[in-house]
Image (cartoon, rainbow, N blue to C red; front, side, top):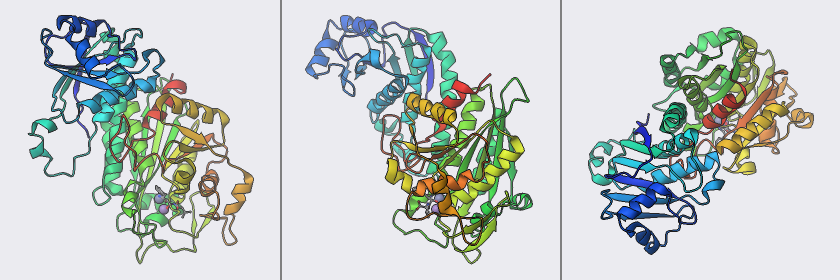
Length: 503
Ligand code: BES
Ligand code: MN
Ligand code: ZN
């Protein structure tokens, strides 16, 4: 896990030492504290920023070294665009951009002036700014033996502490507890997705879930034998080709005042590596399939965030953990397996394995916990990347209200979702001659037929399926993430719970 920098919040006043980062509105007019620094430098700051052609437009910056008169060592000005128009997620991104500016500069201590000329940042927004910095600060150097040495070089020194000067330090401090829990949750998910499968198998993954016990989460881990007893033939069929045993980890957070309140449930696909099985994938790019547990990673990160921020909700997280390998013991195309629901499945393509895993986990959670709703997350289909690229996760649902809530949380957090249809006409495409259903449709509408398959295991429980194959991994660099894994879904679902499902 990333060790974030320490944060403290203080009243707004002009800092007199150290390295400073300040935000500037699009019109280039300095907010009061920056204006005070400028005054101390006898207008040098203004002059320097003009010379650098810095106006405060979004994504622009000016780095002023050793401004005489003000005492400080350096002040980095970051353009915020039109401050009044900044949304919550814009502010998170602004924090990310601020962190990006520090990269390679060897800065270990920083003072941030969180002030705009004509927009007041409340405690939540100030904490959001810092959360953006934390998300951007994430680097996965766990597997680099040379990192320690290079950290001695000034450019690689890491930021250790940040002092944020703001309007309402008390409120910001309070909100930071929540934001820190969320940032940690996102980075836990990224760590899990980035980890290679020789290091993170189903057992190791389950151990990561078990760590949540420290935060008061109840964790149960089922092994092959326990799943066999429950009749989880679909999940176990996927894992049987691997010498690594499969696991089902169930995490329960009981945060509601009412212990009897039905939980909300989040279910993640956790294929620690997807070779395709006997329906083997091509070699090119197969290494990306170490990330085929992005759904499960999100659920663990989410449970961390909810528990650590003390969410007043009852929440169940469940992750089906398997490795999809070809071997003499692997399941074959044409095999017919019996799922826990009793429905039989003809496995026509062993590479359509995620839906098999989800089928049993969803069925079990539905029956054992009677949740208010179930949301599953899965890196389920390549077809969703064809349809939506990396901008939106695919959303499929049997419930319009839940869909609208998810879409709204997507807008608020920047983790966007786009709804695609379910329809009996698509459902027909997975009927099988030999069993109750087959695990692939035809060449068309691949993401939809995958969702239809899952729907056969949800009954009439409100349910949403998020296909995150395009958004969880192989991420483009963004303001708040430069890592391969994005941690997609943690902020989205934390927001959903916070907005609609807490006491
Ligand atoms: N894990 C893959 C989907 C995937 C593809 C995730 C690319 C991330 C990036 C999934 O198990 C899979 O193999 N799906 C097949 C389904 C097909 C066999 C019906 C696919 O998308 O090709
Ligand atoms: Mn597959
Ligand atoms: Zn897969």
